[in-house]
Image (cartoon, rainbow, N blue to C red):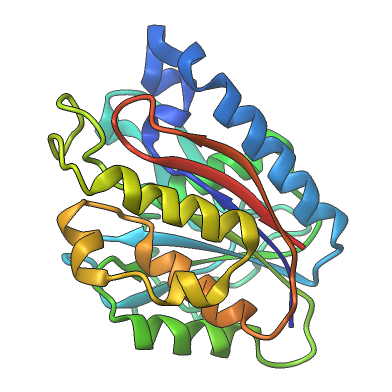
Length: 256
C-alpha cells in the first residue's frame, strides 16, 4: 500500500563535489529534495524503495539493489562513495546480502547505477533511518504497460510503502542542453510538472515513451512505475521545484 512518494531529480551535479564552483546553482533543488524526504519520513512507512532509471546496457529491465549496496561517483571525477541505507555491519543493516536480489550467485555485489547513487546520497545527507531501504533500477526503455505492472506489484499488500522516485525531465530545453534544443521539450516538461504536482496518475501513465526518449527524459519509466503504484490510492500532490538550470528539466514533488 503506497502511503507517500517523493519525486526528485538525479543529476550527479546535485552532489556539490561534482558541481564544484557551480554548486550554489542547485541549492534550491537540494533544499526541495530535503523537504520531500521529510514528507516520506513523516508518513511512517514500513519500507522505502528508491526507483532510479538505468540505461539499456544494464542487467535487465528492472533490477533490485538491496540495502547495503555501494555506489560511487568516481566516474564523475570525485571521490564520493555512498551506501544504500545502513552500511554493512550496522545493527540496522542488511545482514547476509549474498542471497538477496541485486547480487550474483557468487555473492558479488552490484554497484548502484548513477541515479540510485544520487538517491542514496540524498538519504545519507538527510540521515534517513525511518524505514528499511531497497533500490529498484528501471530501464529507461521499459514499456509503459510494464512500468504500470511493476508499480502495481510494488504497492500490493498491506505494507506501508514509500517511494523515492528519481529521474530528470527533457534534456533539450536550450541550445546548450545535453540533447540540444528541441521546441517540444518545454511543453513536455510542463505537462510532467503539472501531472507530478497534481498526483495525476492517468497523465503520467499516458506519457509518450517514444517522445520521452527523443527528448532524453530519463525519468519517464520511473514516473510511470509511480503511476501504477499510486493508481486508486487518492494521494494528493504538491510541486516543490520546477526549473531547467542546465537545459534539463528538474522536478521535486511530494505525494501523500
